[in-house]
Length: 134
Image 1 (cartoon, rainbow, N blue to C red):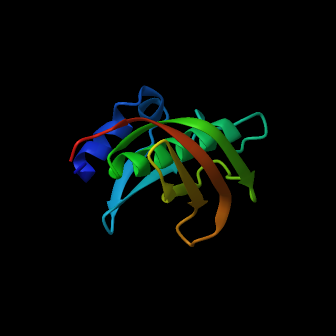
Image 2 (image 1 turned 120 degrees about the vertical axis):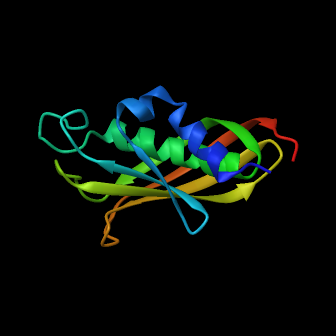
Image 3 (image 1 turned 90 degrees about the vertical axis):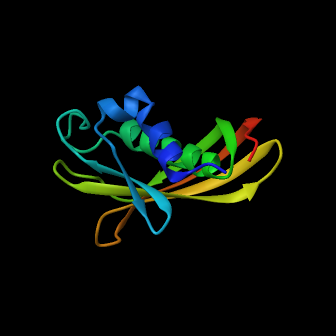
């Protein structure tokens, strides 16, 4: 069984996540990623770059797969942006596994603010490269 401490370590072992200063939270036994948008994250319009949000979502979904004892790599990922995330805003990323197969996994992810406003919805398919003994 993979512990939440191992999942948090997985997120922090990702140097990009640490560079972006993404915080890893544990809420109700689920891992949530948190980002407060600063100068590292914005594009020329002073809003959060889509690549930053995509990286955060991909990591959150990979962590959700790891929580089920699977190491995965991304096959495909689709993201829909509903609202711009402005400078200084804080966004939370919550991932859910929809399909836990032997060779592939399907996940979705929501990116929300503290009030529950949805900023982006993400869907991804992952290839299982290793199943951890548990």
